[in-house]
Length: 353
Image (tube, rainbow, N blue to C red; front, top):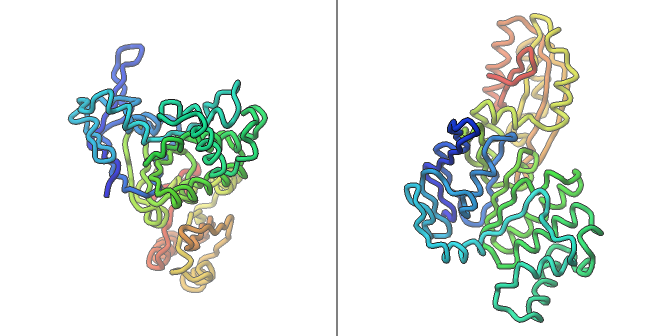
């Protein structure tokens, strides 16, 4: 059952020259209850603007928005009353890149602040705030001030605060972007744990495909205000259709650094670099050796990595293949028949084809 439905949503702005900017254009999304849905795109893609329409922090110019069975917007017009919108927003928690904590009050007071209109007595509020801090493994920091905590710990406080009103939906807007890799991993693991224990629906906004790969069930890729591809994470990784998806699939730091180190413009006419992505459950580990024996091309491995998607090992390789055009064509045919997703690099290091 869909808990969030966006149909033909548009968000337009007028810039300083009164020219219309289409920040979000004709977006359709259906997010199932109890899933982690990733929305991925580079800076300026319109991700945050789109997600802010879910709780009407950003009102759309056009479209229909339905959340938790309640229609917020129909054909661009607000249907829900402001009073009911306030109530509905309590069931939509949000966490942000910069934590948004109040530095002059303690950790437990920051969490309790979200409960001040809950109708609970002060003693009950403090007990619940402490329970929430225990949920994010920060009970021992209750009387600390945010400035005394690491970035990862501050984000945990923000998560506890976002859960104060027992939301059905948690929106994470670039919540790991300001964190180091270790804290990023810990926060993502915590979000996954909370989703499973509380049956939360999480909408994860990020420019980092690695974060999506770690915890998401479904993913939508966004570019210039539009959704260019969406679907099951497994399918997007193994069978990317759009250029954006192909760039994100191979877009880990190690791959990018490898590409930067290569002088692709100096490649010889018979040399081509390919990115290979495949399920190791379906493709033999000797795929590169098989390629040499079957086609007769020289293959050099430039980079290799294995990661898990829902427990299934997915391999990524960058390989340089030496061979004439006929053998390069045979190479592509052989790899595709072997269920390998193949993306070629052009002379500028861009992915295509």
